Length: 309
Image (cartoon, rainbow, N blue to C red):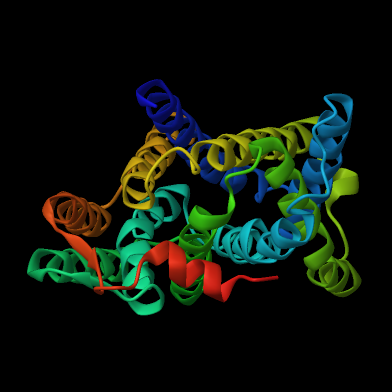
């Protein structure tokens, strides 16, 4: 069991690093293609890739297919649509820092929907985390015009909220094979985001035809990063407690920020750093806080009751 837990930790860390790197690469790709283009490549291409691998390895099963298909509408479906729209309007630095708010959001959702009880430090941590994200969102510098940047930041926060909700729900259900779960989730996301992609192409057209080799390479890199991260997450989440998984996910904004600085030569502003400090402070406080379920009510029991598909 100890070996399994360590392997689960490694899988969650690999997923966090993959998603952080994907954030920075997405910003570079969105300079060449539109958000509907990137969503189509990420999800349709990712679904095709995962189905091919799962079939080849004889690990595509009907067990859990409906459940994971529906979970995929939330993440990566809704999360990717909101995230790609937001990243097309803001910087990789701001986007990466805003990813850090997933931990306090996950805890807040656990309190609201799983009826868990926070101690005083937990309440303080949630407040710090949400305040830090607000500082980054409302004062993260300029990327195009100011209102566009603000909207982009808010869309990234909404994307993180969808991912946090996914983490809370999937903690109960993904005890099955990570590859099988990721495949059905990505298929569900690809189907669910078809109206968004179709509307975008009808309204503004697609930029994929003249993205060039570099544009396609960037889209492909995003696809690979997210597909690998999804498989790692779904494999690891059944072996790691939900709170610990949330804490390990803190590598995501760090990886994204480092990639933004090293690859895109972005430099975080003072206000971005202030928001980042508040979020990091929230993480430190939350690590010392206690989260207890209401007597007689366990998170797993509530999730099971809410998810009898």
